[in-house]
Image (cartoon, rainbow, N blue to C red):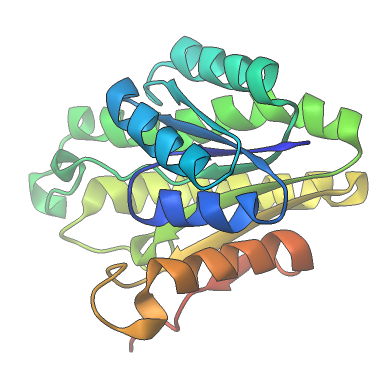
Length: 221
């Protein structure tokens, strides 16, 4: 059995993706800052017959994130799929003219250093397996900067560039790298915006191994 590690796991999309991949035979490593919440989510998955554990980590702390992924591999088996989808903090989203250099430290640690740390931790294991998938989940500001969400716009652009470079560098090794752009609020009442619909797109990205960037919905003009 191989593992999907979901960084930024929560009771919405994270749990839904966990269920989708678990139905295909994956063990599930849930990663976020709060161990208690992770334990509850993992218990829910286990009650449904799935293999799951929670591993706390702060994505802005490289050693913490590395340790969580090591523990996940030791407990559940090699990580075949990594999903990086933690929710940015509200304080990252400041208007452009109010944003100073110090305001970008958190977003860059969160959306650039975190993904780089996670990718470097799991890629050797994927190479050993001979396959793997890295999935990066971002909002619309990753491709269309928003003047009221400067920190995430800047940091998501860096994450997007890094992920695309990985896509090109790893394609010949059987490791697929994809980015899903979600330009709406998940579970906002529209059927196409449901966690289940988004999770299905992420499964299709893993199983179909197509283009680098996928849009959950076209960006509005």
